[in-house]
Amino acid sequence: MFTLERGGILITERFEEKSLEIEQTLLPLRSVRFVCDDFKIEDAKEVISEAYKSEENTKTLIIGAKSFTIPAQNALLKILEEPPRNIIFVLLAPNKSTFLPTVRSRMSLQVEQERKSHKPISLSLRHLDISEMFKWVKEHDKLKKHEAKELIENLFHHAVYEEHYPLSAMQIEGFEKAFRLIELNGRMQSILVMVLINFLKEAKRAR
Image (tube, rainbow, N blue to C red; front, side, top):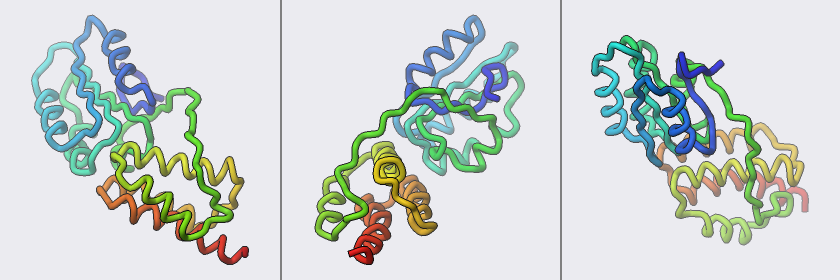
């Protein structure tokens, strides 16, 4: 279980607001906030530098972002596993999939209990045709990384809970691969086509 005394990962849509709440809760103990949209290797180096500044009392490093690059997460692995004396880490992000399994395995994780709204998807997966697919893909091919992840989450929610689509193993794998490719800065148009092509094949067979 995540506790401020031990640190960990907190999944929350309100990561900026939550970072401020945590900072206030920890007073009079010192905490340092590192909050941004995209947490990169340069940010990781700043965190590591701050972590190695000696402290007599507990200091909490609060790191929040919509996305964390793979190099940045890899740079933090060692210090997360063996933090310097009196240093506690709290990581905040909107999605559990933001973090590499190697990071998640080193820290306790908690999901903030809040109802997440999913934006409607203007696409029928059961009756998908190629022209509709490419039109929709073109509308969503210039998204930022966190927006792209949110779109994939919304598409998955739409398939399962709106269309009650019985996803095949290949379709599920397509969603999982999409998150990995987004993190690796893959081309959004190609990622969406990869996810939707399996639905297009099913729709053609059903005609």
